[in-house]
Length: 286
Image 1 (spheres, rainbow, N blue to C red):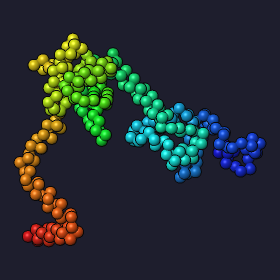
Image 2 (cartoon, rainbow, N blue to C red):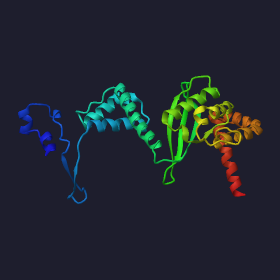
Image 3 (cartoon, rainbow, N blue to C red):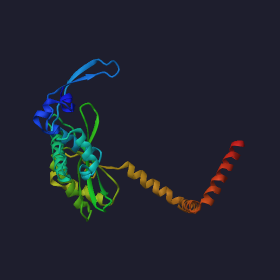
Image 4 (cartoon, rainbow, N blue to C red):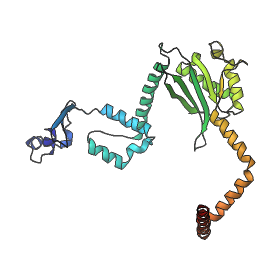
């Protein structure tokens, strides 16, 4: 009925009010009948309603999940698309979206923290940490927590990705790491930390092991008294691969030069592809 009133050009309702039809808002508890396209019969009746708060939250989630820039909401095409769906839904500036995303983060952070420090959880947590450098040449320290649920499912959550100003000494990194643990209230439930084989991590683990907040807690330690350290398997394999490539470095260099030479000329590329085709046929025939 609402669609007929707002869409009918001869609607007395619209003429009497003498207003733009976009000013009228569909009631939140409007019941909409759904019909099957195949049978043409009524299949269900669903209660739907518009909520600006819910829609704004979904927009914030889209920005985060799809890794979109905050300025995306200011794009002309997106603004027109939203207006075609709901003309009274105002999508404002990226500053507004920044506040919405920050509020969404704070809400999620509280939920995760409440789950981690719940009295029903008696287990310990493992952590991974590393330094990441952005395309703007800025360094960030990441801290990720790993744990098992009661259903024995492995879960993880990124607790922190904060700017890590130089110098990246083991003492400085240990202070930042402990600050994250204290902020989330999981200091006393540390089990192990996984990191790469950088030399500053040796100092990092010595500082953690002597920290008062961990020394007083029942932290699992290795035979030398340090906090349990797990070497990153991926980093170890990467070092092994690099060491192996050094043995055949001269051969790799010659192959690269040959590839650059062949790609520099369409004639050479065509000749090379023809020789490869002939060689392949010869191998198949034999």
